Each structure stands twice: as C-alpha cells, then as structure tokens.
Image 1: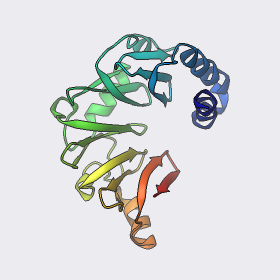
Image 2: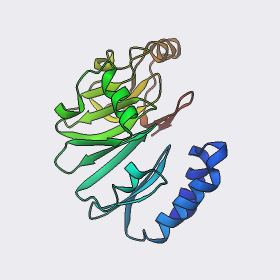
Image 3: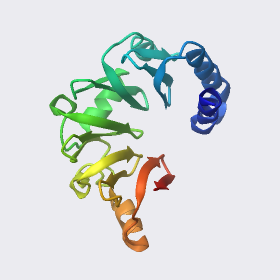
Length: 212
C-alpha cells in the first residue's frame, strides 16, 4: 500500500521531535495525491511530484510552500534549509533559506549549480548535493569536509547516486558500488568491491545498498 509505505518513510526520516508533523504532512499530501509519480521527504518538507511534473508540497517553511504548483519537475531532493528541483530540461533549481544557500554555495564544489546540465538524478545530504549526468558522470556542490566533492571523479559510469553528510555513493552500470569521501573510501577498500548493487540510500551515519 503506497500510502502506508509513505507513512513508514515519514517515521523513519523524521526527527524525534517532529514525527507528528511529518505524519501530518505525508497524510495531507497523499490525500491529494492519487495521481502521484513520486514522493520525497526532506528535513523540512514532504514533496509530491505528479505524473504531469507538478509539485505538491507540505511544509511549515515559507521557501518550501512557495514551490507549490511548480511544473516540469521530474525529481526533488533536499538538505537542511534548502530544496533542489530537477527539471525536465536536465537543469537543477535551488530554493531555500538564504543562510543555507550561502553555506552550500560557499563551500568547495566540483561544478556550481548554475553549470549543471543534462542531469537525470539528484540527491542531497545535509549540505552536500550531487547530480548524475546522462553520460554517467557525477557533479557535486557543498560540504567538502571529507573530500566528498573533490573526489567525486571516483564515481563514473553511474546509474544511481545518493549523498550523505560525509560521503557520496554511486552504483555503476555494472552494479559495482563506488564512493567519494575519505572515510567512505577506506570503508569500501576494507570491504572489497561490492557487486550486484541496484540502489543505494545514505543518511548522516547510515548507508544501505540494495542488491539485485
């Protein structure tokens, strides 16, 4: 049941002091969202994307509420105080609190948001955002505390990406797991090459890989 799955997702991703808020947001979105294409939970919002590419959103944050009704969107992701929207033309638009945007853009990046082109997938950590290009290369912007942005070239021929606070993970077209970020790279080296990986999910201190 899609609605039940989203309620569970809200419980998993919400902070302890905001579980009730998340459940309210998800329930509200899902009540309007029988024609859904995707649903995304960020630290401050729940975002629905319809099959026609229109945004439905529930949030107490003004910057997020202003995204309601935006069109031509195929994916969304968010970190603390900001949301990134992937458009049908392969570009990415960034919205958020001024201090969060400033922090994200001031830190080391491989390629600035304004230069992202031909993007087919996006993912955001707390203050690290990554985009997967149609040619399998990955671009990153934001927190570079563990060299996750400067080492992003470690990930190539990717078909899926996920970002956390200290690392970026990518699944290649051959099903191999790649990563950028010093600690993550050591972890991957210690555990050997992980193969037959279909999807990945990452949070601040947790990483999950789904095998074929």
